[in-house]
View 1: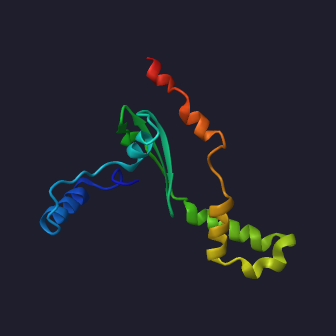
View 2: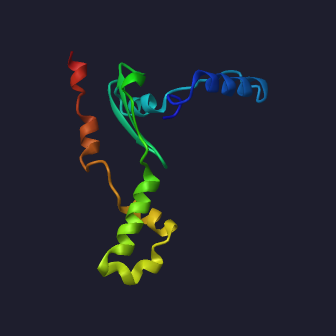
Length: 134
């Protein structure tokens, strides 16, 4: 995810374009999983990133992603939308609403109602990281 999936040559090409074409003075290319974890105030944990077509589970230890332990699953948000559409159109009680099961409306329904994180996530983030007690 982010830059962790990009090879060194891809990062070099991006840097070359940014410096040569856009004349930037400095550039930082960072791993999005590590940045996501840092945003919670932690440097150790497991970050799960679900994109349009893939999902990655990235273990992070002391601020570094562990690429050898990263897991990629070729299932993403688009697959969830497609499954929701299939369920909506095949359910006997919803068949008369099938004409409203457009990709756009199903995506909106998923984004409004689907929930991954528990309601107590905010509380969990305020708790001390047990690793900090070491």
